[in-house]
Image (spheres, rainbow, N blue to C red):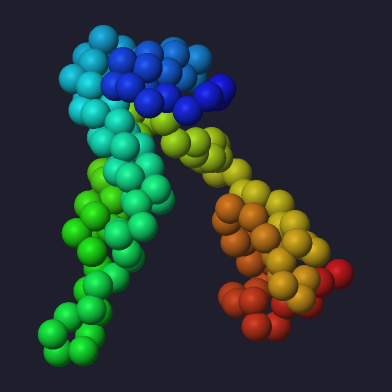
Length: 137
């Protein structure tokens, strides 16, 4: 994607370009893209401030001997969640293509732990109701 976008306008332009490339852009998304760009700009600025500042710690001690997250850490975490939510709404996160109705996925073996099947869907072999008696062939 090139260098890191640091301004709201740059982030907005990159987001629109990415959406057009995926075929998901529509002018109606402009207000949401504006908010998303603002969140990412804020996140980049606060993350740089957090990593550059020696006075910012992840947790600060409390009077009762415990620890609580610093306000900057909590803000960054909140921004991450919001960015994920908005990027999901803007369809920027990849998703697996849905399988056509009535088809089942073939079981792949060897990729999981101890030869267990891996894949998007688990389909029991013919005549079985669970994986407890399944053995790889």
